[in-house]
Image 1 (cartoon, rainbow, N blue to C red):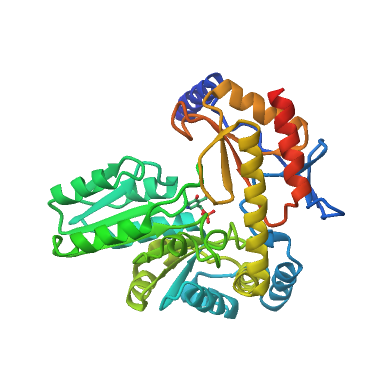
Image 2 (cartoon, rainbow, N blue to C red):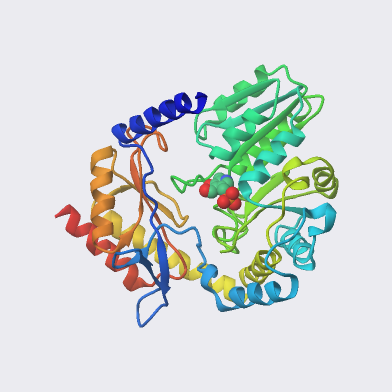
Amino acid sequence: MPLARVLADLEAQLAALDKAGVAKGRETVVTGVVPAGGALGPRVLLDGERTCLRMNSNSYLGLSLHHRVIDAAERATRRFGAGPGAVRFISGTTEPHVRLESALADFHARDAVQLTSSAYTSVMGVLATLVTPETAIFSDELNHSCIVNGMKLARPLERKIYPHLDLAALERDLSASTAQGALIITDGVFSMRGDHAPLDKLSLLAERYDARFPRGVLLVVDDSHGVGAFGASGRGTEEVCGARADLLIGTLGKAFGVNGGYVASSASVIRYLREKNPFYIYSNPISPSEAAAALEAVEIARGDEGVRLLAHLRQVTHRFRDGLARLGFETIPGQHPVVPLLVRDTARTRALSAFLREHGVLATGLAYPVVPRGSELIRFQLSASHTAADVDEVLSVLARFKA
Ligand SMILES: Cc1ncc(COP(=O)(O)O)c(C=O)c1O
């Protein structure tokens, strides 16, 4: 039976992952949320365990639990049903989808936006659709998995990976390229480290080399961790650097607290993607309730409440970063709510994340191959739903680990 041999192979590979200590293993099951009370922010209930403070959520503004976002989802479910029922061009486009696209275009000051089911598929779709056999792709070595896999799916003339943030190396690759067109792609904020790409310099480089390529140079930025959470008004890495991407990819599943992804660009690019992007044409969109909830989240983010939430997020992030420095932990400087604590050792990373969990703190230990060897770390993610008391609680657990 052929399946038996395939199973034996798969099981051997799984055993090797277990043996090397790099398997993701059993997933944590959240069974409920305990609302904020007194000086403390919300806690999650885990299957068979105590309540935990979640320091590993991407919901940077705390909007996933916001009553207006939840109400919007409920109302849209009653109006349109639980799912879209079809892909966009058949009959799956509902009013919340269209209103959300226009609110996001407005938020990012772009002509148009295309929603997709996730940022992952946005990136895959952009690369599969816009890259031709005459294109060279230039990509930062620490770019997210969606870019790595999108580059495999696309069939460019050249794929060039430059060392993390090394623009001199990127420039060397650009000048050596023989392609007709170039596509530079980068994460805005790098999710494992909380550092960000210098979009101002990248955009100057793209401009400088544009004339060298007969089909021009495109700058594509996946700012999934930046939009909503980074920059004075939450416009992300573009706002922090004072620069613009030709195509900006964002997610609705992090700072906006819901689910789904999008591409923002000029009207013709978005129209072209609607006609050609297979991830958009042949796959269901997010549900109407997700679109309505995300629309409410965008409205909150761009109003006064969003400004207050961002200011609070910056405060708790500072408090945590200062506390880590006082305790003598190594981190990577930055202002983003992803705060890495560099442990630089796999066994100690595991021991620290287990200690945190035993003491009611959920944070993510990252080891090779997710991060390079020697860069093993615990990733903490701050949220506007955290309080000063929450931050102090985590710092006191870390102090006990150190003692
Ligand atoms: C840079 C980047 N792109 C895309 C994604 C995936 O986002 P989504 O869940 O919307 O597919 C992530 C999430 O971790 C990310 O860090």
